[in-house]
Length: 265
Image (cartoon, rainbow, N blue to C red; front, top):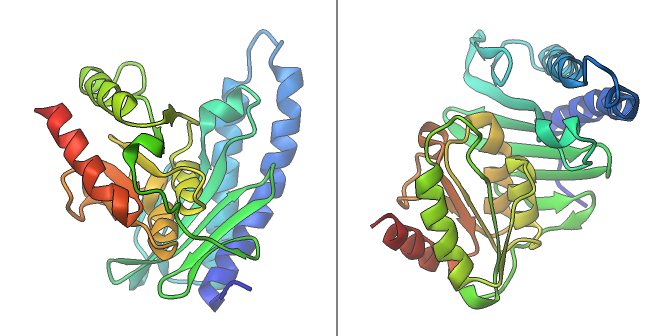
């Protein structure tokens, strides 16, 4: 059974409550796909409503804690030592197109250190949880990162830069290098799930650039507590600030760092 601290219990309960609304909204998308207006406004409203539910539930249980959220930005709390970092709907484009790969992501930061993480896909009912020093779990099953030691056997996850953003040329260079060195590459479109699946051993490694703190904070806790290594792409510990991230097991992390470094020239 996973260890659930009082704070992690609160996070799990908030994710489940907000997830019920997302399931209803997801069920409505089939009708909206053929409407003239399209589903984009509907999905934006679902995103905002989910964040509102999360903040309300977390604030009731932990009054005074601050927030860093995708929609609402930074909210200072009276308690300066704690803040929740939340993404109400990671994988918005998947949600918009009726693909059931999206998640609610909640992390708790204490005095600048990430201590708890929840990544919840309400459609599949996969609840990934982790507490610093107590391991990572999928529902009631303990998670461990994959044990593969050779890049040639590894399945690697990544994310593609959005249209209109910078970094496409650099990404294509890195993509070619990793394609040539690995068994394959996958792009599922939700950073929180990429990290959760790396923690679960479904992916052997994951790298991406230009991410936001709410995309990755909970997943960082998951991978670390599953025995993996998470750094920025330069090997440092500034993932939340830089938005660049590499997660892998201990055997593959250094080869991936070197491979990406060579690709950058």
